[in-house]
Image (cartoon, rainbow, N blue to C red; front, side):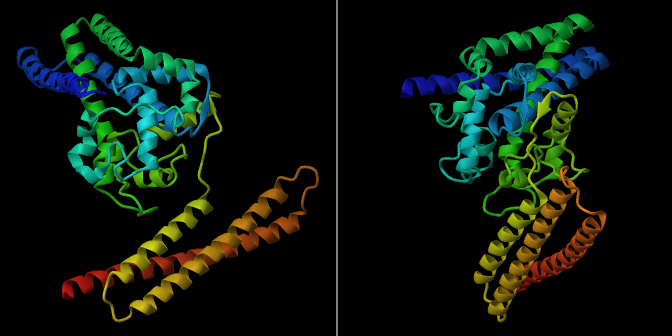
Length: 386
């Protein structure tokens, strides 16, 4: 892209983003002053469009097209592409391409929206950079999809047509085109944009790192509330092919529930789930590296002793986890062997062994957490003493 065309691109993007923000901040207050709050029907319609287009981004653009965390049919693909277009976040081909780059080069200069260049850069300023040419090698699977390529080629008119049609339908149905334009159009797009951008900015800034500390991604329950479950970002960056972001049953992850429901309705299949054993193993390995790295950076009298304890405790945990995994796999094979069913007594014996191994691992895990806390507290004490 030449300098002149880059300038025109930035001017066009700035006019669009700045224009709709300005229009919203002027029109919404004036509308409320003159007519009062919009009707409940308008607000409900705006909320439904917000949810449908938001889920189309998280379940469609993100977990389906970018990460292939489940499989589905052409009808569901069409619906995801339609409402993804309504969300005004670019074509799925470019979105997925940039997102795959983000995962491959997170926190580096090759990361399209790296947090290392600052909060606001990661939030939206990266959009003003020179758009990279889409490398087909990285999105070859998507370039074979006719609907994806149709959306890519005709993205701009499709955005205008889909949004205009839905906003017009809401206005016609509830006899208020201005309210539909402001709240089902401008306000909805405003929320979708900033909530999605929070994943690039806040979800790499504010939260906890339970699964990996090798990158800046964090888990944050609050962010999940406004991003349809995308706030469990540390887990996602560690196990990006999993169709879930919030892996616990109580984690707020509407996208996960949507994909699960599609599977129950026969509209999705082959949902990818990271096995618990793999999760725990990776977590232990990351924690071990992190704790030893922290110990080496501190001047502690018992540093070598603590390093040795971390290494030995980690090895014990990983050995126990391996035994537990192997025994569980044996139990499942014997239980599901339809040709030659294992004796009930044998299965019960293995089940008892599994329970003992699980109990032993849980005790070791508690000791591991206690050791981790001791090291982190020692670090803080050393810092205060300096």
